[in-house]
Image 1 (tube, rainbow, N blue to C red):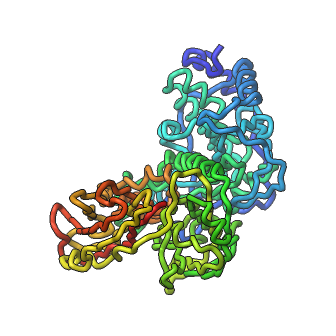
Image 2: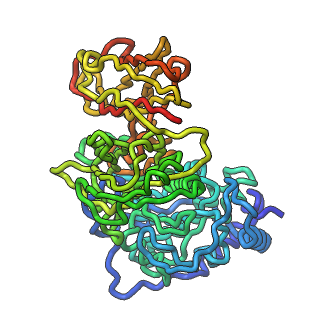
Length: 589
């Protein structure tokens, strides 16, 4: 028998399910409990206030999903046994033994939770080592002018957008016990309705992963309730590493509301389906971290969790030159956290999307940018970027001076920062040993090309590979063209009759930064994080442009490099934007 009842079985068992649900009774209202606030889709300048979600607004007339003994047994067997490998091919994580804590990035302590269907969820017993867990309160509202819970719609869209290794917990934050019962009963019914629209296999899968808490956050006898009343009031989760994680805004770029605009509010309504972005992001982070960890690199910690503001500098001793000569790869990892782990990310992390860069003083005495990032709107971030071509700048080993810039002097954005270098031995046939600096950025206008003359670079006879390395991002927004932040500025580098081209077709789009959450970008930020930019997205590392030159850079010869900026097939027009550019020709031996 399937773990999930068919629609006909649901109809036959509807009355019994309704009776079982009503028999649970009203949860006791805590004495002198303070009212719980509503969370809007906006930047939430203030979180205090009365419940904005009334019982009538969260009630729907749809069928409750019952449970069967067969479904319970199958679900228990499935989760207790666990797969030899997770569905993504990774090894399951073991249940961590602690120490535990309730703050962001702490190890999540195993818990049990009474559910509205009369069962109890046991985290340890169901732990597979492959799953993520998301907790969504009913006090997140659609908008400030439509203060209805996000629970009331978009559940089917949430399931469609969600990774299949996700568990969802719907926990009320309402303070009135009768409102809690009405809210949770209605959510159970919505779940039944949503599952009945799915094919049997998909419905069976989600049937065991959608959990409605019997008691409110205030009534929880575990740390979950504590978090939902503090830094998790916008929702929170547990990732693949069993770490507590925060949630961001569910504001949907496709749901602009003229009423919000007219009221001078953040104009986008919240969409429950945006909750799926969080586990999508956690899974992607887990995969990227696994790839980095597999390098078994030598790690050099530049900062270990200090709260930095605007910038920081440090002198760091690297391994000596003979040891540095054994490394053939360089990765940069940056973990940026809000300074207060016991508060929500919004209003805690920095509010703006600023250029951030790691620089090292090179052999020529100049500070050279080796990795670039864009800070998030109001959220934490964790970036990993391959900066291997810049390894030659560290080749002499010993003491090096590093500088990390991430905010301007007028808005220093204090941030708890962990920044480390990963020096790896991958067995590559060559490694970067030297580089010639090519061009800086400039104002994006009719004089741009004149500011970038041809460069001649001698190629050593011993070269095994020659690579173009560049960091290219556009900033500023001219009124006519929206260049260079929101326009498709293009960059052509020619050598020996071959032209290499870089463009940014996502620039100026409504939502093309959203898919970047699988590639390192933090989703659900405040601000216009969805909009595609010219070479970057808010809250993401800037991926270097890397091109291996061919016969045009033959060892023992001199190559002439020509660079032009292109916009709509022509030279850049006069405007107000600018290009931030770092570019090298790197030799590998």
